[in-house]
Image 1 (cartoon, one colour):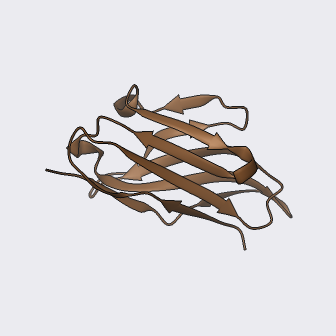
Image 2 (cartoon, rainbow, N blue to C red; image 1 turned 120 degrees about the vertical axis):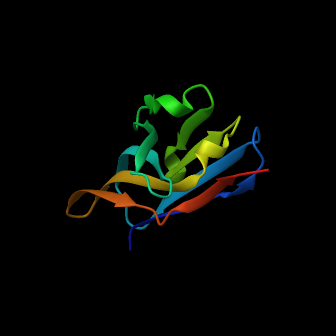
Image 3 (cartoon, rainbow, N blue to C red; image 1 turned 30 degrees about the vertical axis):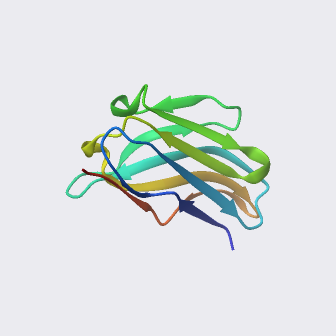
Length: 119
């Protein structure tokens, strides 16, 4: 069974840091673009950052300069290093991956991990 599992969320004070991880498991031939999205209460899901299999990155305007996305291809894992966190970063963070599996290419989402920034 193919799945994405996030970890690393929690409660942090403003100005602090967190590192999220998302591991893909199952029979996966390769992973194309992976990314992080977030959804705050009452708001639409928005792009945080994406990274291609070659390492090219893209960031949402609100996180540029503060967040860094990276990936470990042999481990099928993507990371999100979040620094200088602000209360407005509070949201459920979701991992998304475009996976090459038996039968074709499919988009998978993780279950989400809560990130709360509060003093």
